[in-house]
Image (cartoon, rainbow, N blue to C red):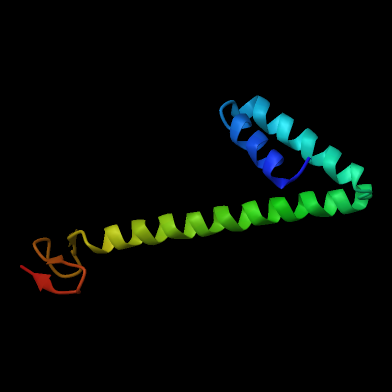
Length: 96
């Protein structure tokens, strides 16, 4: 099995993600074992895959948090330090 065959299987398996993920994992494991990867090497590969996923999720979380912060800054908030009627916008301009 070459790279293109594996990619075709991945595309087909993506239609049914639960069963597809099992199929992809088994095929990938067999390919590694067939090419004389040790169990430790396979665990290292799996650890690196999880690390990539973690980094991707962290970057996504940062992006979402930045968007939420940006949205909060663009809203006008009540500012009641000295007066109930004072409001402040994102540029710290106060209005009575």
